[in-house]
Amino acid sequence: MDESPLREPTVRGKLPQHEIDLLEFAIAKAEQSAGEHGVVAGFQALRRGVARAQREQAAGVPYGADLVLEWCSVADSFAARFGAVLLNSTSR
Image (cartoon, rainbow, N blue to C red; front, side):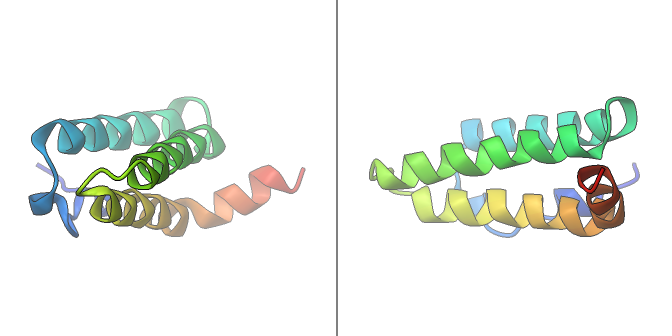
């Protein structure tokens, strides 16, 4: 199977399985959106995940910091992979 650079874990081993599942689903949807609806839609979905992770951290979830780190890492990887397209799409 061809592994996406977005799927390279940073701290996923420290997260509960349901959070890993949500992250993997979001990655798949972001990549699908990038192909079908445009890169901006995929990136926005990941940014919503970052915001949710930040709310979890603020609420005191024990793994909150790791959750934020993982979501930010995925969003950053997505932006790096599709960055030129993001810049061109948002400058119109």
